[in-house]
Length: 565
Image 1: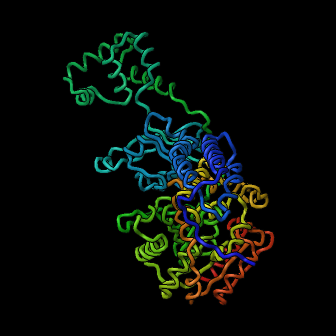
Image 2: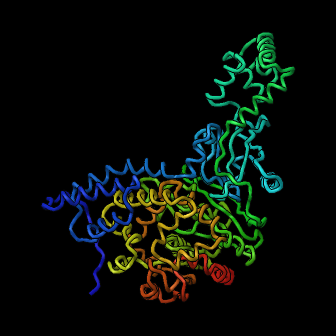
Image 3: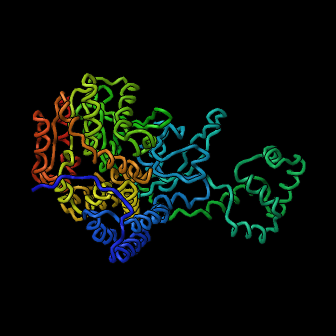
């Protein structure tokens, strides 16, 4: 007999004699996972039986586990190697992908350029033409090159900020670092000892290295022109130079010699065809919403609602197929993902996503469009289509799960996936705890392999992702999903656990689902729930495909999208 799902509630029930030991072990495992001392899987093996049991989570366990969140937040950021690479730079620095999208940024660049992760070239004041020229310079001549960006203030003054850029092969990203107009303490001490330079003279030397004239130095240092000229003359004498150019060149060389750019590679991907996407944003009720657009600008309009696994046009194969199939794809970054802010505390998560999508469609003047929905994104797609049938032509769902009506639907999931549904049934903070720990694990794996946290132990799925053509997409989705510490996934968990069957029942537009028969998250046997609720649903099951059919069968998906659009 199937067991219906009932919500679990945390209460202050009395602890059994074994609970303190169990609580102590769970607390130890949580902290050990955060520090990288214990595998994430060990915690899952210990915690999942507790969450699956029908007794309520003891109050003592709840308190101890919740306090571990602070340590986990710190550990997650510390494990981010791409973030660490950028943060260790002493001047403004950022990493961008081949589409010009910001993957990570240090504090100096964030403040100076007013950047956020996910921003595009427009936020840098760089045109597509200039970015392409930057990439071509890197290809022509081994070694770093320069690129001009603009701060919000410099746009008015027409004074660009010069960054030195290089291609970082490990992360398939460009590392851009502000020209270093100062040197570390070791070089400063050497200049003092070798040439007997005073502190003021060393500051003058740094200014000359930046290309400042005597007049500009006087203005910057708030000294008289005569005083600055005297200091420059003293510099020339002490350093045995005949001109300002000579000492400026020496200073610049010292600066360059002190710069560390370990792990950089100058060789970029050989393909010059990247099928880039356009990046934009809008505001609704004070919340920022990010969006992308790719494919054929003159093609049929399609809205892409991404899931928690494959990004929003981050994979090259999607952008290429959209262009080839004549589709103009608009991808909204859903609440809590990418740049889009999470729902307000007093706003229902699903209603928030509905209103976000309507605002986006209004801004882009989109009507009677096909919605391509991945995984849990089917729910907001159904909500819009059932409420505003005149605005939606049809829905194409990829790897979607039906409403959770029975415990068996959760219990058949792989443990490392089902743990989140079980955690969310107890309380949002439990799901948050597990999500943060998952992010720690993802950061430990790094941008190249973070998807292992989703497809661990699923060899057929991992084989799809090992394809070289998908590597840049994996790296790009790393920042997209981890940007807001997994808040978007937490929002999705709240939406999934509610009964959204009425949305299916009210649907009047065509609904087609494409699903892999090897999908371990949602076994094909569960799909019959869709047709039980909405008999008009068309389901296409793909042999030898799993959750990664979004990539392995991308051509089929975009061909079907063209037919439905």
